[in-house]
Amino acid sequence: MKSVNEQLKPYSNTPKYRIGTVSRLTGLSADVVRVWERRYGAIAPQRSDGGSRLYSDADIARLRRLRQAVDMGHAIGQVARLPESELDTLANRNTTVNSQGEVEADPYSQTRSRFIEAINRFDVVTADDEIRKAATLYPPRIIVKNIVSPILQEIGERWAHREFGIAQEHIATNLLRNLLSSLFRLYPPDNEADTIVLATTNGERHEFGILISALIAATRGWRVIYLGTDLPATEIIRTVRTVKARVLAVSVVNSLNPLTGDELNLIAASLPQTTRVWIGGAEATRYRSIIDRANWIHILDTEDLEDRLKR
Image (cartoon, rainbow, N blue to C red; front, side):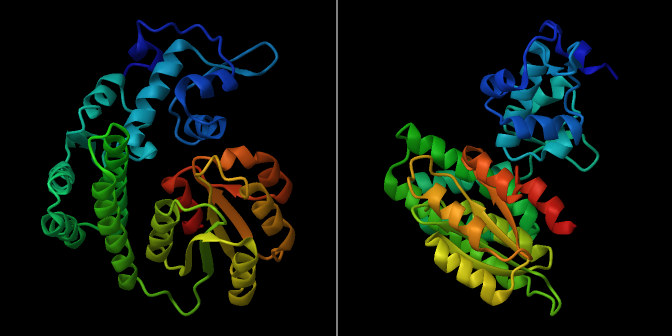
């Protein structure tokens, strides 16, 4: 098999970019780049004379392809070592990666397409039927990764480009929320299960990150206390203390919320030492100083979450 550098020609292999520039050029946080490199072997940067990692144009191009594959719902662990030709094949949205790391026809694309088309014509019954049929065929983690997450991304893109109105966006997200909530009943916790509390703080109304995380935790045998969105930090803290939660999971997506910093600082100052905090979401890195000071865990993606839940 060709090396990564051989696959990426004609991109330059000259090492010249530091991690901050790589983050800006790829849209990936520095944490994600490091994890993809160290844990999954996605790229192999060189070192400067001073020992700093330096990345090439070829590395940048590969990271962009990998980000596109992950945005489409593929797990980084499955695609990290694929050659460039197969990453390009994935980009047509009609393929997926099987457990052997082979590219094959995407069995979930028809469900996604029929759901989106039904939403487009306001056919709520058909849209609901499509995702509920899928729920009888696949386990929840597959539903989340290959159906729900890609649908949410496409809905967001269509709404941003005014191909979907607010009403269509609401119909779709309500159906998906109901589906995920219904799957919880299939996974009652063990009597000795550890407890995880999931919530967002005041002013943070983006729900799907913690809702998906709650479902994944339930499938892993945890006792899930799902509080939902837009809660005062004082209520989150009170709940964590009352149920003696081992983990509090919070999500930060809204970059314009002026309350988030104060709320997170209050949580950091008030939680018992026996409770670990896991924080995720698109804007989590904005609060790196709090994360580092409080020794919280930054959750990079659903695969990282699953790995920590299994431990």
